[in-house]
Image (cartoon, rainbow, N blue to C red; front, top):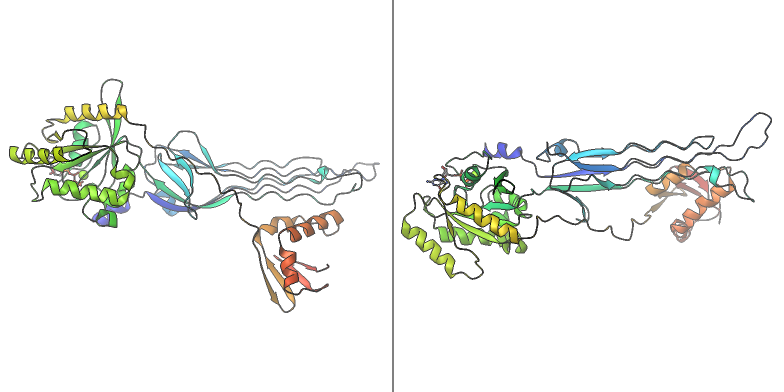
Length: 429
Ligand SMILES: Nc1nc2c(ncn2[C@@H]2O[C@H](COP(=O)(O)OP(=O)(O)OP(=O)(O)O)[C@@H](O)[C@H]2O)c(=O)[nH]1
Ligand SMILES: [Mg+2]
């Protein structure tokens, strides 16, 4: 049953996005009665649609992206006669929950962190190709070619939801994490006397005074080995990654037969195993269930904490059930938050300078040289065999990309047939 419930919270997804290609430039010549040989008037292609991500607070999981995994924006319209440009394609707007980090799935590069309200372009549409109106020169008055549209960007992307909260509550199962968030905020998580009651993170807004508040996140309980994938907690630690402050709750009454000191150390080990950086995040240590704990138990735990180095505050003793000590806890959290930097927003990482190489493969079958090079397809589409300059342009591409050199290395002779993505021609040196 736990397994099923867990399925309802999806905080990771992989999808493919492709921005629209630009429309092709047009080849056209001015026609008018009684006017012979009108000049070139082919219009430019329209720009392809961008893929744009926009935060929508109605969404709190990435579950939709489990069902729809491909997002492709429209191509720009082709240019038309009479210098008419093709229409720009509509952008494809994708709604996404706040706090989603968008990464290039192949390189791990952060493309965007959707935690600020402005929409962000994740993949840029290709520009339109230029129509033949631009290619007339004094020596080339009849340009029978135009430029193809540029290809839109495409990515396999990894989406990861990392909640935006100031404070993250961590601790073993059943120590009273959900009881605490219920006691101090309007959040209504399920509270019950069994482990892993909480299966999805819950956010609560805690008021400090009339104007100020902070956001607290209750995440599923952690257990020993969590950072190696035992239990549920590890998957959820990513949701405390952005938190400015950690509230570490222990059950000081030891009602479940565990030792609170031992719990405290184990959870810190799990944090450190998950991320070195997370283990240095400021922590407030909360001893919960003081209503049923013996005074000696509380004293022993506090004494132990006081012997530790790097501990800035005293243990805060509370009871999430009777609410004793919760006011002091809120005041302590508010005080510490004032001194801490804001919630982490991940910076987009720059694209690697080297763009994808113009890759190709050549195979020889029955004296035909087959060239596979997907990026050449839009160029071939607009090559005009009857136009010398158009063919010249195509030849230049074949030479610049290294295809010609490799054909020669494979021993190609004049008049041998080359097939580039279905387009066949006789080779001439
Ligand atoms: N006596 C007492 N019981 C408490 C206190 N806080 C929580 N409990 C009880 O402890 C049990 C677990 O509480 P939860 O708040 O669900 O614990 P949790 O840490 O969220 O547990 P998981 O979601 O399973 O990780 C419930 O039966 C609560 O009523 C407390 O201060 N005193
Ligand atoms: Mg809980």
